[in-house]
Each structure stands twice: as C-alpha cells, then as structure tokens.
Image (cartoon, rainbow, N blue to C red; front, side, top):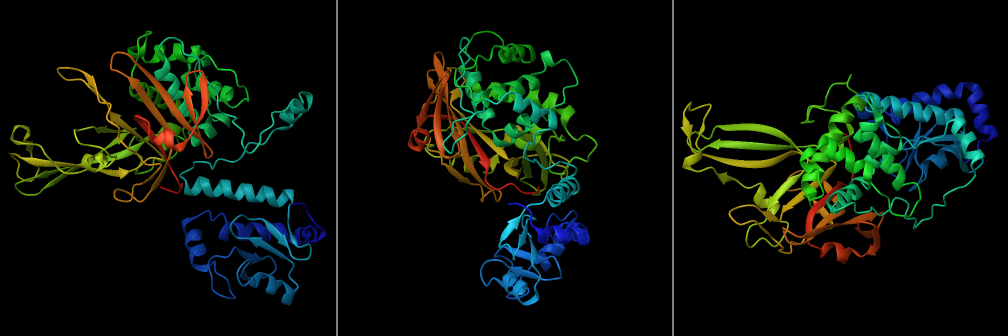
Length: 462
C-alpha cells in the first residue's frame, strides 16, 4: 500500500480531523458508550447487514458493505466520493486507484487511537503492538547486515536445552513457558524494567533466555545461570536430585510473579475478577479463580469463597480413563460428620457439602494429572488418560482452549525422565533436553500426559 494524490488532497482539506473522528467513534471506540454506538449504528445503509466488511465514506455519513451487495462501491460511483475507511482496521480505500492506500499520518493516528482505547477500556493495560526499530536500531541493523531468514515453515524459537544433571524437570517447563504466546510477546518486547540487581533477577534471566530461543541459533543452550537463580530463589529445588516438574512450574510462576509486580501498571485499579489482586503479566496469563461453595445440609445456607489458582490438579482415581475427571473435580462432595463446619445461619456446626466451580478461567490453563501417590507406599500411576487437542470448557465457562504443550514423565517414582511436546504454529515437536525432533499429533495425544497446557482460542475483555 502506498499513498496517492487523492488521499493527499483529502488530508490537506482537514481530512486528518475527519479520519480521527470516525476512528474514535466507530473503529477504536475509546469508551463503553462508543462501543455500544458501534454495535447499534455500524450497519450497511443499503442492505442493513452488520458484516461484509463495512466501510464508512470519508466525505459523508454513509456506511456500506464492501463485499456482498457492495453498496460502498455503488455509493462511490453515484456520489463521486472516492475515499472510504475500513471500520474493522482503519485502512483507507481509494476507489479511483482501486486499492488501499498507506499514509504515515493516518497510520500514526490509527496506532494512537488504538493505544488510547486500550488504556481506557483495559484499565490502562496497553495493547501489544508489533515492535518497530528506533533510528539508532536501524543504524545498527545497517551496520550489521547479516539477517536471519524466516520462512513459512521456520522453526525459530525451537532450541534444545542441555541437561545440567537431572534438570530435565526444569528444561521441559522452560520449553512450555517459552512457547506461551503472550509471555513470549512480553519478554521479546522488553517490557520488564528491572528495579534491582539484574544479576540476581530471575525475570531478567528469563528475558535473556527468550532472546536465546528466538535468536535463530540451533545449537542446544546451557541454562546454567537460570538453574543457579532457581536454586537461589527456591531453595527447596536446589541440588542435583530429580525434582517434580509440576513443583518447579508453580515455583517459577511464584518467583516471576513477585519480580514482575514492578512492571505491572500499579497505578491502575485491579480488575474485580483478578483473584490474585495483581496486574503483572504472570497473573494476567495464568491466574484463574476457583470458587468453593459450602452448603449447610440443615438450612441450605451457602458460604462462598474464591481463591486464585495457577493450575488445576486432578486426582486419577481407579477407573478414570478420560479427562472427564474434571467433571468429578467439580461435582458436590460430602464433607462427612467428622468435618462439620459452623454454619453462618444456623450458628452451629452442621454437616455440609462442598462444590468447586470455575469463577474465572485464565488465558493459559494448566491441568496437573496427579500421577504420584504419596501415602503409606509411594507409587506412580501410569494409567493412560486420553486428553483432547481442543478443549471446550462450555460446561464450566464459555471458552474454547487449544493444546499447545504437554509435559510427560516416563519411568518410575524413583527413576524417571521428563520430556515435553511443544506446538509451533500447526506443527508438533518433541523436546528431550538437547534433542528436538518432529512429532505428530497422535504422538502427543497418545503420550502419558503429566502437565497439559491449553491456551484460550479467542482473547477478549474480561
């Protein structure tokens, strides 16, 4: 797309003001009122459709469909109004030239309006925009012309990790985190502002790790600095003994959460459904709300609490052969006569039932299949549990999720090994420490899943 004389003439005739006004009220919609106005007013004035790529004439108040009955084209022919703006993306179409046209001033308004809208509608959280180089960075690129070629089937982001002595538990979690889309965007756009010693900051090290993964290098990376910082911040994971990948996942999120608080827009009000009361990137991606309803069996009084969670741990009882165990996780459970709870209404201890439900599902939900039993005799449950590639959480909350990472454990409780499957675009790869090999979706779905990572398919305002 390039500019044209028709767009330049429009710009000189105070067209930037007109463009910004339409953008504010019908495209970026920087207020709830504007969103309602767009929902009720943005329809084709010719056929009444709300779809078919609506465009607004830049010369008069007319909305028309671009596809379908093509009323915006008819309007341009009959009126001679040659410019229209796409109401979805803010791009300008010139009917004389027969193409979309680019202009730097219009593009700057487009970006600025979207930023303003996201700050107002998203409680100040800025929308992620593609990185653009500064003048100094452009100069640096010109001085260093070596480029990394990225093709359609590129594997940029795939890199093995050297096992530093029973550290496969850490390597597979690092693989899952580096392939979490929003976390990748956060670190690769340099949003972490370290207020302490960068040499001891786990978030800084994770940022460097993301750069290593997406640098185009193929040789396995040695995460010795990350391991040292993990031992420093989570001393219960220190040493060269085999650790639990699930325990490492929770410990890593906890440390990242504590350090990322400094990057969070702390001047903003925390959203009501943010159950960890934090706006940091970790909580925006991984934190959900688990609701517990305790029901008195005498008077039916309900006592409700909501607690934050970073994962959903599922018991593997005998006879469970599907991920329908999640249904069992949310069904009512009798607390029994030995666990009576004081009822707020009866003001006495009564038998109760307890039911768990999802108050809020996070963007990334991790299911932890509890394969390790620690009772009188510790053992591992190796039962094959089928799990879906696409997960419909409609019975609990209206959200669809797609599988993007699976952590597996092979072997016994005493002697075992962790590996991970990672999805990149539509391709799957097996990550076995330093070794990365192609895999099929059947390989993934037939594996002995231990941690299942699902990403919400459609992101919207909470």
